[in-house]
Length: 172
Image 1 (cartoon, rainbow, N blue to C red):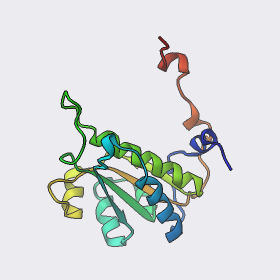
Image 2 (cartoon, one colour):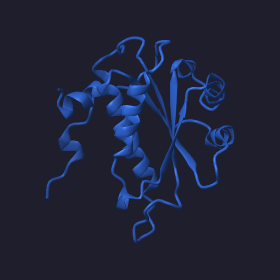
Image 3 (tube, rainbow, N blue to C red):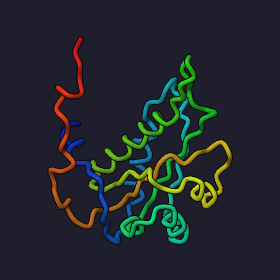
């Protein structure tokens, strides 16, 4: 079994997918790993859409115009319900943070079962809302392209380039 650090280093943004369906058991495993993600006050202010229908997939592709996006056999659309999210005493809404946690759990679960993902935030959220006919309480936060990578990353170490802890951590 891999350590958490090994698993985290294995995950990278995949932008080329095989034309191979994702097995139901792997998809369900990823969804379950996301389901158990923590959230502020355990409010779980999220809803996911699993898009496998080719027609709907093509419509979503119009909201994020990248050729590789169309290759992914599954698109997970992560939505947040700001009305259901926990608010800090100063009004800070934690919905986006909570949705980010479930996405992160999902990306790591996918890496564990040898699937690739790419977390996408640069899409037309209004068009996504219309395409999925989302109720007013749900905001699409991010897409997660999911499938079997067509090839290893061009530069396997690129996603591991990180600032040193000395630049990002302060001990007091």
